[in-house]
Length: 264
Ligand SMILES: Nc1ncnc2c1ncn2[C@@H]1O[C@H](COP(=O)(O)OP(=O)(O)OP(=O)(O)O)[C@@H](O)[C@H]1O
Image (tube, rainbow, N blue to C red):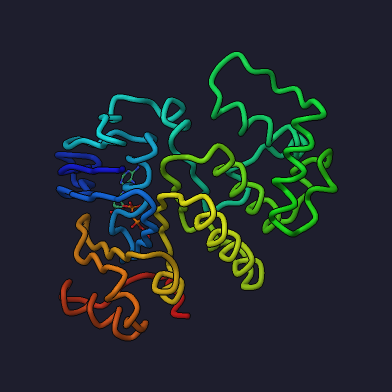
């Protein structure tokens, strides 16, 4: 499904500010894998997401989807296969457009060029049905400007837009971190049900250790640009936050330095 082959990324090479962000990352995701990613500050998690989504190119190595190399494709060219939800609820949607216009944009992204952003009765019905699945009443506010929605509502809409056209890969970049606990839990539940129903192959970066253990079928730990541990479903079932942090310390030789860590 998704394969990274010896992917490396260096920032500011040859200067005093040189930073190794990724070092020879090998990663293979099978169809339907839901992988949570944790790691210290500066471990390379965001860089990994940026390289998969095409925001930046690797210095070395290759990214493939379904066996096809995609490193040469720009971000917008990959958006047909890759859905992404960011930490910032403002990032995934257009505030000056209505809910239905935002959805029309997401719908068009999956269908290629030449499709209008207009919303006819059939599309409106579909949008209403999709929004109703979120269970927060957005189906009754199709013509509301997205800028008026709360952070949680926007994040729910972003999640729906990112998954609208059943992407091959869903990237979740700390997408609940900016929300209060109740809204974060709502978005987590929505995520679980959408990923399960659509059988989406998903990579989720989180600073919430309990969430990293509870969600998905695989957990990856990163440190200093490397994947230091890849835990499968069976081993994940027996994990606790304490054991997870212990494993991190044993392998990396230092405590997890994460200023945003949430233990549970
Ligand atoms: N655009 C950039 N220019 C220079 N250095 C960068 C850039 N982006 C990231 N880095 C550096 O690359 C390394 C990896 O950063 P990255 O943001 O991928 O880590 P992260 O695991 O997402 O960290 P955090 O959990 O703190 O957000 C860090 O040392 C960081 O300072």
